[in-house]
Image (tube, rainbow, N blue to C red):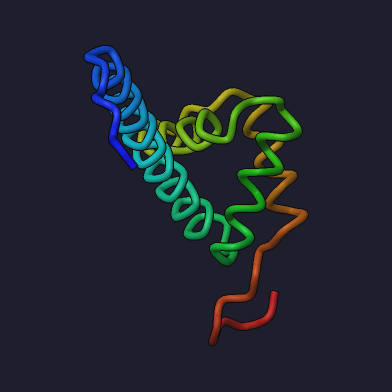
Length: 110
């Protein structure tokens, strides 16, 4: 089988596609880190498991029609400043009521 020479445009298209993919992967990694940090805050402050923290963020996202990453960012801002839009705070509280809190090991029953 004889190999066909590559057209100059083929290589440029491939490089462009790979650069776009790298940018998408970088954005995904950043987004994942933000969500993971927000889950950690929900776990610590809401006394829920990490899986429950994930579900809480998903629920808030779905019930407010705000992207999960944006909900996570709002949770992180809230952790730093204490400020959160009232509707998001109410939904976060409702979601925590649905999914937790779990009992802290060794703590007396509530």
